[in-house]
Amino acid sequence: MKKIIKSSLVIFLLIVLFTTPYLTLAVSSTACNFLKNIQASLFPVAGTLIVISWIIAGIIYLTSIGKQEQMTLGKKAIVAAITGTVLISLAGAMYDVIAALLGYTAMGSICK
Image (cartoon, rainbow, N blue to C red; front, side):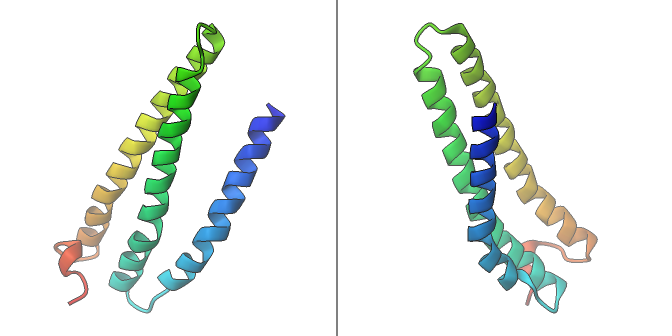
């Protein structure tokens, strides 16, 4: 359990380390530029994390070789990867919803 917490902390710190420069670019004077910069900064990071989670889940499941606990862990990791993929996909849709709530019709035409 300590190993999982330690590795999660390391991953979190790496994410913060690599996304902080992008988030400072996200600060903008207008809402449209702010939203565009947030999307441009965070979606690639999220996509990378999704790919990494799928790879780790697959490795855990494939290396279980008859160990029931390991196989259960692999199945849970795959479910977590599916959930993360769905959430990131919904985040893209929510991006358009937020733009509509701010009075813009589509994110493509938000900063003209």
